Image (cartoon, rainbow, N blue to C red; front, side, top):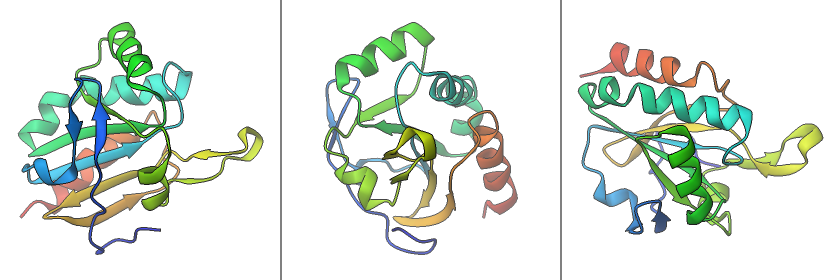
Length: 151
């Protein structure tokens, strides 16, 4: 499990844009890396739309937003199109990255799977971990944290 202050785990995951992405390529001050269970489900749709709707505010705060689930790229494309999303979605079909970040575990009645966790990364380190986030509030909590802690 990744802890605050630890080095962020790099990854190589295919994106909705057809490219393979790694953490190293994002040079923004902050990377908001959020893990979510499933495309086109109510909570995940709310969370993705909130991030997408705040994408310009997040950019002004120096943040790049990346959503990760185990869904394949084709489903990510449908999700992005159906919801008008403007953020990068990455596919982790083996859950290797999801597990490396500690975003995999018991989801109660839904069984084992991806936990809704968000990691705020700066300068290659995990600055803040938000565990089992509320999809309706995650974006605002992350933006408030960045505003309060910018240097």
